[in-house]
Length: 199
Image 1 (cartoon, rainbow, N blue to C red):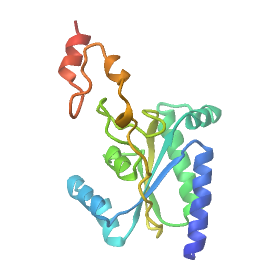
Image 2 (cartoon, helix red, strand yellow):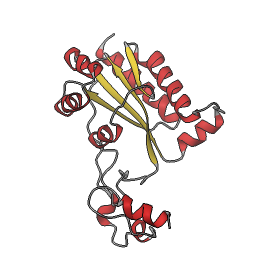
Image 3 (cartoon, rainbow, N blue to C red):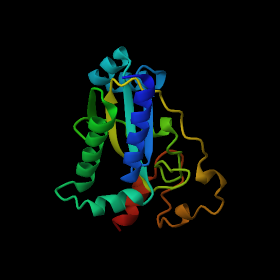
Image 4 (cartoon, one colour):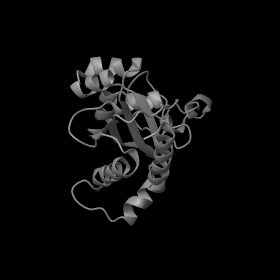
């Protein structure tokens, strides 16, 4: 398959995913420095082999309400309808648009630091809540799938944007927390939160 054909099929796959509410997509070169650092932390042989082979990692996510409408319309049931539906969509994307060897790493067994990958993709920024915040959708975004492939896709650039917290002066998210456990550097003050909840 030519590079142009692959790029065209991949773009069609992006449209398919977006129609199902999966409107976030990033491609990483497994041999890039940030992913090599990740391999060292995880000691994941799949990622190590992927880096040597020059493979790509595709991160798929959703932001906003469209995914939830698509999920309801497809009447997914079972013990984990969100992951089941996400896996089905990732499988269709691989089979119908990639035309390459691929393995769905997430949802699935094994740990993958999705927040780390999301930050590399520019999908979120640090917030006083201790979780990432999307520049447009705030906390209303999630990681739905990660696919390892040998398709020679062009790595994507991080999404441009700034943290919405950067220009927020009122910080209603902090004042809404009764024990005032948010806003400290790093993670929320869990001890303060637990003390308040348990009294």
